[in-house]
Image (cartoon, rainbow, N blue to C red; front, side):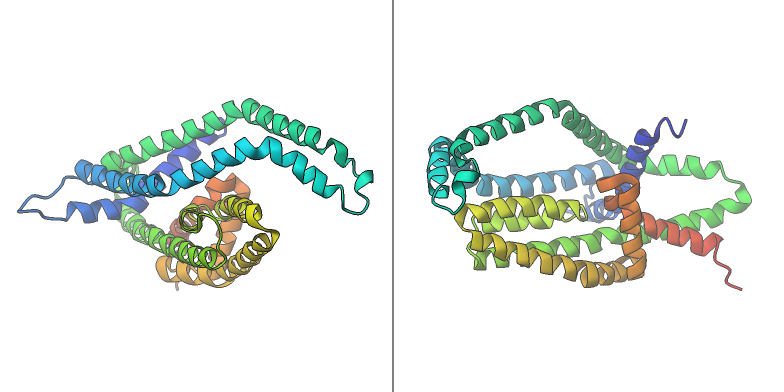
Length: 315
């Protein structure tokens, strides 16, 4: 049954883990007193969601209009730009042997093939979106009713072992909750650094792309690659020099982040050795791809606490 329900169990685990990670934020909100009134847990969750939604809405409301305008203009001019680009390429050495006379037809075929791929892969993307929405709703329910589920789980354990397991899991909860702080610091470092570098290099939409780099850094490895591809396209529109500049910056930053920032920040936040963090990311990615990388560090924190309590021989 577990094998058959592997996907659903993965969604349940990720939802429960993020509920544990986000609960300290909700608890902080619930501690706020306004003339003797304190928000309840459901209201605290709603306030957190509204704050995140409002911040993202304001950001994209300000940042997206120029991007949409430029993209629309680029798509309008694209049919005229392709023949001009082909004419310039004809002056290159050996151009007659590269079949540049048909470059417009080839470009049109590539565009049609891309559109066809996007159309045929639409059901797969819709399934992923449905999984994300399911995980989000489950996370909300875990935050609302997680304590009852936790008490039920403990009731299945022998009374003599229940207290020890409860204390161990609460230690793990405290350590896992600090992961969000560490990940937030990594996101802030990448977002601020990227924005400054993009402004120095005069990259289009520097602030938008810098913020997106920081936000998508919550997904280890894949998030940076996705946003960097967008940055490369924006840089290449202006010049190849800018493209090489942003690529060099990203290669340097990734190496610094993997070698210094991630191990040190995660060690200080979740108290894990740098080697443990890197191994967790490697194993998580191999087991469950992007989702595995996303939950690798808090899962490692949970495993370390359980091993320390039940497996490590201290005498």
